[in-house]
View: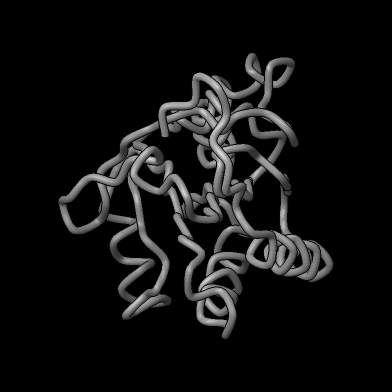
Length: 178
């Protein structure tokens, strides 16, 4: 138990320093490119124009083990077909995450990504685990959740409903190279 607590502290310690500068609602989402579980790469910039649900999780995080299957169910909900659900595992070793996904999320709709050691999590400055960020079509964070409870999932679902029904701006802004 002590070993698990020390491991959690060591993995999460980089994020603690980032809390003061954590990404919040209205902030641009930090860009990233991460490997997926299949060996490919996924970059946030490739998803511009789509709503993104970005979730950080780890196999040592008990609430993550409950939240991730609930997020998978949300990803399968009618009306969210155009939302890109990214589940970023921060375990240092890939094998525990591979085993968890094979046992608990076979045929996952979530796009599973690896952030070994949590460098991206630290850049986002999460206040807890799991950590979830909803990003609008323009790359701006519109909702943040830390931790997991049923009420949080309902808040995420409502925020996603709002984001998917909001139409992107049709006029371009000066200096915008999208």
